[in-house]
Length: 117
Image (tube, rainbow, N blue to C red):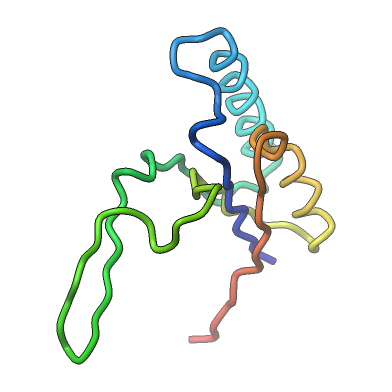
């Protein structure tokens, strides 16, 4: 079954670029990503640019409106994701718990809805 592991954290509380803490944080991500890739469980994943670069789009009565920023104002922002193929929810949760940002924020595990075409 496919799961999306959504990584949420408070951008203001994350390690700052150029610091030893950021180097350690990123190395932990590189290690985790390589391990998941080598296991054959990884289907994809990417980091996202900071929330300040987001644009929200809505269509109401045929009119498109855009708003700078994320859909909702929250303490934690979506910073990236992994798409994984796991045998079950327990395995997906175990992977999510190994994501470095799980120690700083939240990793949401969502099953991917599969449609028969």
